Length: 246
Ligand code: CDP
Image (cartoon, rainbow, N blue to C red; front, side):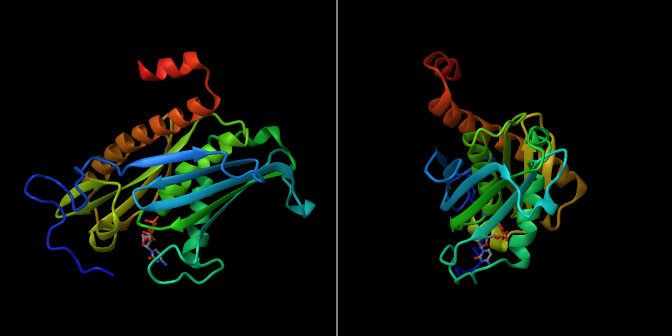
């Protein structure tokens, strides 16, 4: 692992990767990449590479796990053994179990589970290459995979983190900022702005948290735009694509 940088932000306000404090890393998405999944999305965000696959709705077995009035949504976040500098031991860990739980809950208000009683919707998020912010990258990919699978949703979910380095809040932490920064605040939200995931590592004042949430909101707006562009290019009509350009 590289050493702690002396400074994270230079005199021109630029970060180690050349971004300003309120800029997200470049993101590209491709939907429908897996033919055996009902829905899928491959997403690159900076040096993160994640693949999300959705299976279902399908009948849930064993039947005792079925919910009589709605579908069960299961979310599994997994890091490939080769996704980080040190090999990840295959199989669930405390970290991946926690991330799977909170990420699945991030979709709670949007997935219309009431249409599929007794069914299960499985979301698999596989991190192929990790470079800070993988839980947020996985949520962004999972949203598009759910839409690709035709799951009825009230809207999209977007996610990005805010952190603090050199005493300043920064959007979408890169690896050195994540490793050596003072705080990491991953957030997910719906298009209505309802926060569906909020975690915090490190120390922030109440005022910094409020400002950080606003910063994440701006980041999520940019991500919604990228997600909508992907959706329109896959499912939209020519007229709708024109509308997006205006
Ligand atoms: O990836 P995310 O920021 O959501 O989660 P994290 O626990 O804050 O991890 C930050 C980064 O540390 C990951 O993106 C990986 O690059 C790295 N990491 C690692 O190298 N080995 C692990 N076992 C876990 C994380």
